[in-house]
Every structure is written in C-alpha cells, then in structure tokens.
Length: 558
Image (cartoon, rainbow, N blue to C red; front, side, top):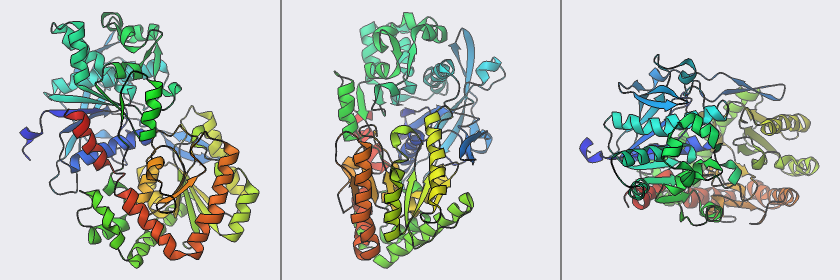
C-alpha cells in the first residue's frame, strides 16, 4: 500500500508498550496489550503510530533470593532496536525547559498485505537537559508522585509536540489509560491559541480523542494535588481552566480524559458496565481486549495452524475450523509445547517436572486482588486431591517494587512450594516477561485465574492459553464472563457475585476434584474436546485483530 494512503494516522499513546523481549518498555498487561494493538495494526495495514516512553532503564529484572523478590537493573540499548530521530521539542516542566527527543521502532508483520507501523519512543536523556530531567524517561513507573506527573507531561504534551515536529498528521488520538490525558491539554492550548472560543476548542479536542479506561476501582486512577500540578505544569493549570475539566479537588487524569474525549470504552462488557456506574453521565462503550495470535501461539501450534488453518494469523476467525485438526496432531503439538515449558522450568527452578503429570499454570502481576495464594488456602485438601490425581504447578509474576503485600505473596508461594515438596511439585519462574509468558500459556494443561470480583477489568493471559488449546479455570470476571462456556471452553470457579475467599476456594477445589481432573485422567477424548473448544470458541474471537478492527470502525473513523 502507498505510504500516502496511510496518512493521516491514528496516534496511539500508552505509557508502556511491549514491543520486543529485549526492550524494557513495559511492565505488565497494559503494555502487552498495547504491543499487541500495534502488532495487529501492522498485520492489518492500518494507519497507526504508537507513542510511548523510552524507559531506558526498564522496569526491573527479578530474581528470588531466600523467597524474596530482588529487583535488578534492566538497562537496555535502544540503538539495537530503534533509530534516533532528528527532531526534538521543548516542554516546560517545573519551570525548566525540557527537550524531548525520540527514537523510531518499526513494528513489522509476518502476514501478507501487511504494513509495518512506527512507534515513537520519547527520550529526555539529552545533553541540553538538567540532570534531573534527563532521568524522566529512565524508569518505567519509578520515583514519586512528582516524577510520575513529570513523566505524564513528557508523554502527553511532549508526545503531541514531537509528532507535529516530525510532520506527522494525526486524525485521532487514542489514549490507552489516563497516563496520556495531558495530551488533551496540549490540543486545547493549540486551539485556543489559534483563536477558537473555549467551547469550540473543547468540542474540537473531543472530536479527535478516544479514551480507553482499564481500571475498575476509583483508587486505581492517577490523581495529583493541584499545588503539585501548578508546580509541574505552570500557568497551564489556570490558563486552561483545568479544575473545571479534571476535578475541583484534585487533578484526576481519568476525569480529564473522559471530559475531553468524544468516544470512551472499557475493555470488557462487564468492565464497561462498572465504568458507567463509576462515571455517570458518560457513554462508555465495550470493546473486549484481545491478544495477537502469532505472538502468543507456541512454535508447535504455529506450525499446526499453518498446515490446517491457512491464513489464520491474518484472519484468526478461521480458527473456528480448528475442529478439523486430527486429535493426534493437536495432542502432539501440545506435548511439544509442554516439553518446551518443562525445559524452561528446569532452567528456572532446577527441578524437572513430569510430562505426563497434569500441570496448572498461574502467571500474572503479583498483587493482592489477583489472589495468588487462593489455590493454597486449604493445603490438606489440595494434597488429598493430588493423591488421587497427580498435579504440578508452574508459577510466575512480578510485584511492583513498592507493593509489599505483593512481595509477601511471592514469599508465601515459595513457602508453599517447600511445604508441599514432592507431593505437588511447584516451580516459580523468575523475571516473568514475554518469552516466559509464551512458553507458559502454551505448555500448561490448565490456566488458572483467581481475581477478586469485579476487579479484573479484562485480563488477557487466559486468552493466550485458549489460543494454544489450554482450557481456563477462572473466576467469572473480566473477559471470562464472555468466554466461559462451561465444559466447552473451560470452567468457572463459583458464581457471578461478590467475591468470598472461603466460598471461592471451596468452589476451586470442588471443580478440580470432581470435574477437571477426572476428565483429564479418565476421559482423554473428552479433554481433547475442551481443548478444541478453547481454540475454536475462544481463540477464534478473543484476538487483537478483532479488537483493533472495532476501534477502527467504531472509534477512529466515526
């Protein structure tokens, strides 16, 4: 396709973006989703440009020492993955001029009729800048409130200005979460400076902005005191009437994005319902998240689908036809993926798990609402189940460096592993990232998810498992409310109601003991049917191609 036909572009702003395993530009699910968004845009030859932070020192590398998470430097070299851009722009932060430059990373595609899309990595590590300001793009989610707000100024205001300096025409701005909300103020400032009335300027900004919210609880939204906002943003706070737009008491980034975006969505049907309750007066649409098919399919499943479902990576809906794949070949692909996982687990934990033992996978950000310890809440019952039906468990996940409760969960998981010993072998994979994640979702036999309802906005790890024919056992929240077809794609834990740890753990054990494990060990054909259902019913739908197409049709071109 001619480059001219791809302009103007939609600018997709995200504080983090998982682009390559060696690039420290992401910390977890939000960044992985953003990376999948860009990969699908490339596959579908859609006119997007991504904007994110360089995060030269990354998030952190994790090791486990004495059951405790230890964080290590994760510095990476952007010159190996991106090209430095000649343009740079000035942004005033805390009364100082801060120069913002950028690097361009191209997101490619393996699909026919595709088109690589650019991602701009914002960088303040320039000799013109004050030493403090050079560090603003060093750490992802590092530092205190002041550092965080300054980073959001770089992303929102600096990002808009750098795109303009590069000559990039922008048709729509897509704010992936509230971190990028300050871009709306830059657009508002430009329109007011051009002579528009306030009403005209606000309407003009709204017409060009799309906002995706990911957080189902009020406490999870970025808020800053106005004295700090005035210190960092200067006269913009007063000149633009920010308190009228972003909240009278505090600068609420979500409220700012809602107020200045004409199209808003949550990331699953239930999440959109929750968001409408949280933000009365706003129309919140629902576009359920998805995952990039090629990225998250195991090597064995890629070959399998290439053979039996041609063009699946460009049109994942074709996986509806995966039911025609011979059982022997589907089982062989799973066994190959499981062997690859076992090799990773042995490297990680020094313990070799058994290929013929039922393997449960649990890997995600280690934070309290994910309830990583729920599976171990009744050790006696878990051991009794394992005596009848042998199981082993693969675990992984990072806790934020300042999340002490999350770190305690990691320590508890290691204590559980020691206590269970050989009765239930457990391996914790340190430094969970894209590469380990792909091996985990492809190689386990069952994917477990135990969040507190209704705190899981969407979740995507279970979608990745389903793509590889791995059934889910999950709390009914987020995407699983839409994806769960009991006994066909996987199983629900408990009912769709307020969370209760005691009831949920009992429901988890009951489902494992009475339904899941007997099916796996005693009815192989029945288990294969659920594996097929995971692929044909979940894998064919919960992908980022569907997600990005919907954004294009419903949000970007309206």
